[in-house]
Amino acid sequence: MATVFRVASSSPAPPPPHNFRLRKTSVSNVSNGFAFPSICSDRRIVSSGGRRLIVAASPPTDDAVVATEPLTKQDLIDYLASGCKPKDKWRIGTEHEKFGFELGSLRPVKYEQIAELLNAIAERFDWEKIMEGDNIIGLKQGKQSISLEPGGQFELSGAPLETLHQTCAEVNSHLYQVKAVTEEMGIGFLGIGFQPKWERKDIPMMPKGRYEIMKKYMPKVGSLGLDMMFRTCTVQVNLDFSSEADMIRKFRAGLALQPIATALFANSPFTEGKPNGFVSMRSHIWTDTDKDRTGMLPFVFDDSFGFEQYVDYALDVPMYFAYRKKKYIDCTGMTFRDFLAGKLPSIPGELPTLNDWENHLTTIFPEVRLKRYLEMRGADGGPWRRLCALPAFWVGLLYDEVSLQRVLDLTADWTLEEREMLRNKVTVTGLKTPFRDGLLKHVAEEVLELAKDGLERRGFKESGFLNAVAEVVRTGVTPAERLLELYHGKWEQSVDHVFEELLY
Image 1 (cartoon, helix red, strand yellow):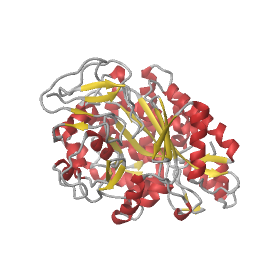
Image 2: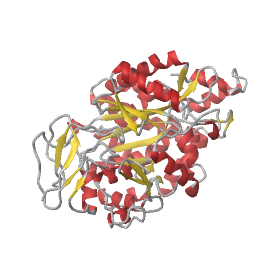
Image 3: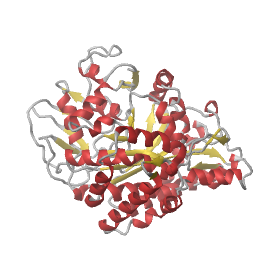
C-alpha cells in the first residue's frame, strides 16, 4: 500500500524527496494560513512501500482523515521533507497581527465587533467564512486567510507569492478592505508589538476551543504565557528550502540573526500606559512563556541536525490538544510520542493522523519554526512599511546563495552563549547591545548590506522595501526608542498618542 497525502496545489512541480507520495487536491491549508504549491504534478502519485493515509490539508479536521495503518516516525520526517522544492518554486508568505480598538475610548474591541467586521469583509469582498460551532472565527480567500489570536488580534496570513511587490500589494489590499469596514464601525487597528495601554483583564478572549486549553495550561509552565496570548502582535515571513541541506543552512542563519531582526523591528516599549524597560517586550515575553516549546534551539547547530532531529524535538514537546468530533480534547502534559504509541490518557488507544501532527507543529514556538517551510518569528508587529520590510530583510538574506553563505561565514564562530546573550539582551538594549569588540549595530550594518545585495541579485527591484529599516541601522535607534522619545517629549507622557501614531 502507498502512503498518499492530498496537499493544496496550484502548479505542477517535480517529484518530492525521500520517495514521498503526494496527491493534489484543491483544498488550502487554513490552520496555519499558508499553503504552498504541491510538490507533485496534478496526476502523479509517486509510490513507496508502507501505509496508506489520506489527509485533507485544512486542519483542524477529523472527518476528512482516514488512516488505515498507524503513522510511524518516518512518516513525520517525510512530512517535513515534502516541503522541499526547487528554487523556481520558492515563494514568500507574510503574516501579520494587529490590535483592534475603539477609536473613541481606545478600548480593545469585543468579539461581537470582530464578528461584525469578519461578516462585513466576507460579504463585501467575497471571502469564505470559517466557523467554529456557531461563531465566525476567520475568513479565507484563495490562499490567503484571516484568523483571530486569543485576544482578538486580527491576523492576515498571506498567500505564497513570488515577489515582495506582490506581498506589499497584498498587505495594502487587506488594510484597505479592513479600513473600508472599520471606519463605519468606529474601530481602528494598531501596529505595535505589545498592547500599550490595557491590562490583561480588559482584553476579551476569542471563542476558540484551543485557546481555552492554552489559557489553563500557560500559568503552569511560565509567568508570561497569558501575556503572549492576549497582548502581543508579530509580523513574520515563511520561506521555502530546496533540500534538507538547504533547510539546515537557512535554519542556522535565521536563528543566528533573529536577534538582529528583533532589534530592527523592536516596537513594544509600553505596558499599561508606562514605559516597561524593554524595546521589545513582545520578544522578552517569549523567554518565560514555556521553555519546552520556545527559544533558540541549540541542537539546530549540531552536526547531526536534520529533519529527523527536529521531529525528535517536536515529539517530546508537550501537546496542547487533539481535535476529534469537532471538539478540542485537552492533552496538555502529554507528548506526541505518547500519541504515536496510542498512549494518550484523554483518548486511550487512539492513534494520530498527519492532521494531528500538523496541528501539533503549530503549537511549537521557537524563534525559527520548521513546518514544510521555515518561519522567521523574531519581529514585533508594526506599521505597514515595516510589514513589507520584514520579508524583504529575510528574502534578501536567505533566498540569495551568496548572501546566505556570507551570513553563515559571518556567524560561524558565534558560540551558543553569544547567541543566547544576544537573544536576551536585544529586548532591552536593541542595536546598542555590546557584541565582541563593538555593538550589534555594526553587525546589523553588514547584515543589512547583505540583504540589500541579495535582493538586487534577485532582479525584481525589491531593495527599496528595506528603506523602512535602513534608518534604524544607520542611527542605531530602534522604533521603540523613537516612541519613547515622543512619549517623554511632545506626548507629555501619555501613551494614548501611540494609537494615532501607529494607526493603520
